[in-house]
Length: 98
Image (cartoon, rainbow, N blue to C red; front, side):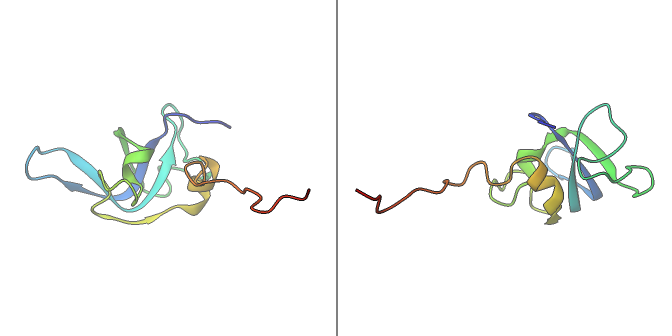
């Protein structure tokens, strides 16, 4: 399953005092718009996760720092499903055989 533009579902929310927009907090999961479950298989209603269709998955990563102020944990299964190592440098041979 290749998701290019996953949104966010989270256990909590906070409201930015400057612009009044709500953002995710607590544990965050990747969520595909139009589905009723996260990428890792959790049901949104049973898990009591709030949907954030205006926040992309890349914006809640701690490395980005964009909307990740209140994020405490990123689901490792969702991160792996969306290619968490995509930005990291791959394996290279440093001393090839002759």
